[in-house]
Length: 272
Ligand SMILES: [Fe+2]
Image (tube, rainbow, N blue to C red; front, side, top):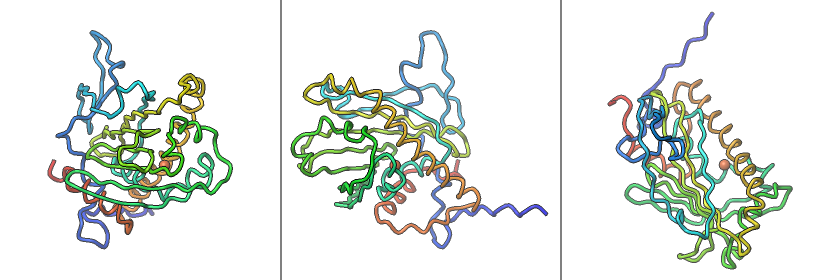
């Protein structure tokens, strides 16, 4: 006998909130749908936003992108999950155990959380508890200053619909050693896949040549971390699909704030 297919509920289990995985990405924002270099003269490029074919490129205003002190690493990848899983994954540093093989043993401590109109932010300090790690993790911070080496602060912010991650010293005007900007663009009507566009800016050390030397290793390291994240978010999507709804009883305040933001600014699928 065939098992009964799960009944998909409009509502999160045990709450009066609508199911976040049924809230579509708001199209009334600028999204990158391709890199400029992919658009060749007199050629068309087929891209999609939430299942609709569109050609549109608008480069965002990314801080430090035009600074000569930073070297950019651009990437994009298809990930088989709802875009909200991506936001949650980056914002929740408690999943560091997943990256133990690459990052060693890190203990995240939430220093501060804040929110405002259209944004949510969390600041962490990651204590290094040792353990074997990939050499790329040390090279990523080769441009860090004295302040950051004493005590580094990781700031993760969702500025709807974009997300950033910054590692810097504790002073308010500190220049980061690393800055990541990401946009998650849904590519199908069911919101089961997204294309993640990322710009990772790495601060050059005093001898800038060293960064160019280790660049291929850094690229491999970053790709490996993302591959682990991808495995986690795609597993979350599969669990969601099997259960036929969002059964996750979230209690972490940062993620609750983030979910509220994504819910408020997204578009209700039923209303599309
Ligand atoms: Fe991760």
